[in-house]
Image (cartoon, rainbow over all chains, first blue to last red; front, side, top):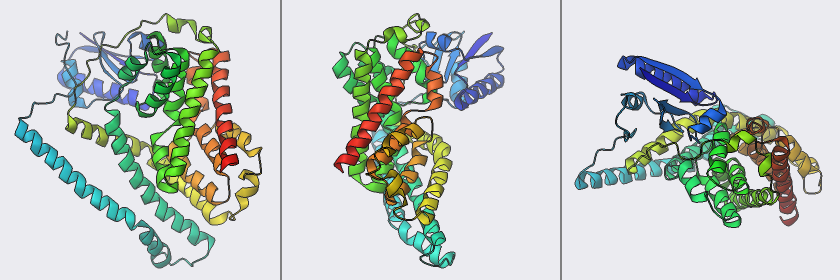
Length: 77
Length: 360
């Protein structure tokens, strides 16, 4: 079970990252749980200064940009 | 469970030395060809606009409509071309600066030096107002002094590289330099004042309870082709987002250019109307527009007799301070600090406006 979290306060890029991650996980056939973290205190607790960010199993993988679908796939494996 | 902690998003294969050299030659030659083409097209835009307006559209010279249309068909491609060039360059420059690196530079700096550095780094570090809050928390909890953090937060949106280059393209280096100097000066001084006021307790309490430290994202090592890709990505992202603002801004500018009499603005926004500076700031602060959209309006106002100081003050308050930003920042700043922040910056912008009106 992969725990995928998208950090961001709801800007366009955050939604886009969330869609990309969802698609990547589906294409990889993972069992996963995707949640959006919009609370600022929680985002800050990850040490992220630049949203959106992708967190996989509690680890920040990318911050401040939306990686391509292929890059997200590599991060999810 | 992912075991590889060092997975980097972009994997750069190590090119043999020869291939890397040929890649550089390829970039340089492609860059040269594109630059020459760019320059040729850019240099003939005025001619093309003239031809389109008077031959293709058959508009009569000297009419309001013709003047507005010529302005529009000349400025739209010109500004968009400048924009692509600049955003590409800035995208490459920014790939060298990340918020994490900037924070590492600023953490533990003395206030005076820190304010100067923060104002300068604010210009080149990628910033988006939607990230203002996480950035603020990241800076403050890492030990960047409050005043230094504000210098960064003021300069990052206000000294906008798009505005800078558009001003350069439309008015020449003097106006661009004035804007850059004024923006840096306000960021530096306002941040310093906020630091002197000892307002640390006016930051929401939960901010300081936040875990400090870096996100642990492994810094990517990017080679030059990665940086060129970053530049192209920036063009796709930023130009894709702002082109409509630019076109609308130029349309408004064209309307003013064609229909508003030449000295109409002199009475309202001219040098002698001292009250126009504070009024411009008052109107500009709650407004928000993209820097790329506001510059064409600025150009039109200036050409109709508005004073440079007044117009710059208006522009800086529009792009530097905004209502949405205040709403976001309210989550981490208590009212007194938020109001001080906006107050100090607004006063700074006004002073700059008065100063330019008096000197120029």
